[in-house]
Length: 156
Image (cartoon, rainbow, N blue to C red; front, side):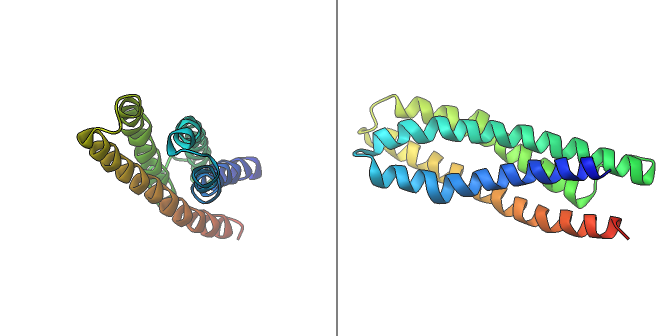
């Protein structure tokens, strides 16, 4: 059981740590160091796609390990625990960003960004992307607390 718990924690650390690094280190640094926002976007966009892929894989690993832990501990699956619901919400929000918002933003970036309508639509999508990523981060922080409590309860 400790191996499953360790894998759950590792998956959560990788995902949440990646979001924090991306949001507070990588993106701001690139936009302040590179000469144009276009160049920074050329790096940030593929990095965000990779971050989402890491998150989706990490989330699935966490969920599978969580379900297996419940199966071993309670002799049944418990899909509606707080941890499982939180991780599914994180996966759904990440998938929406990855497969709906990001491709549309990429398409807009390749068009004439100087056109007023295009720029406004890109900014609107960027705002939604930021909200989704922030929501995933907040849910992930809550999930850390839920997981810590769960692991503390199971050690008794």
